[in-house]
Image 1 (tube, one colour):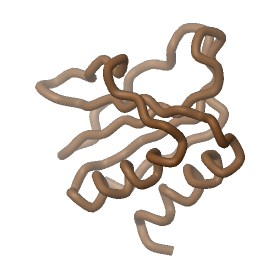
Image 2 (cartoon, one colour):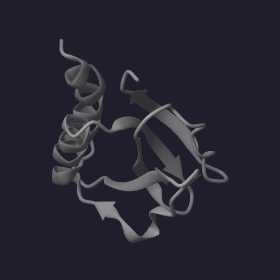
Image 3 (cartoon, helix red, strand yellow):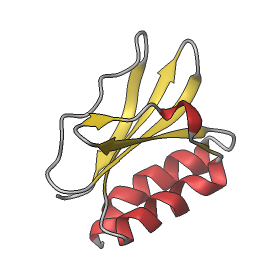
Length: 103
C-alpha cells in the first residue's frame, strides 16, 4: 500500500458507508488553524480533494466525528512543513475514527 492509500483508504471506507457525509477543511497558515465554516465538501469530493492536496505536498490529518450540532462529519486538517498541534475537537463531539499522513 502506498503512503497515500494508507491514509486515504480508511477515509474512502467512511465515505462509502456514509453516502451523505460532508467534510470541513481546516488549513494551518501563519501559525494558526483556519475557520472551516467557509469550506465544506460533499461526499463524492472528499477523497479526491484530499488526494490532490497530498500529491501537491500537503500533509493531512482527518477525523470522522459525531457532533450534536453538525451530526456525523469529517474534519480534514491540511498543513505543510512540520506537523502542528491539531485543533481541538468541537465541544460535545466524539471521534469515531481518523488517520494522518506520514510527515
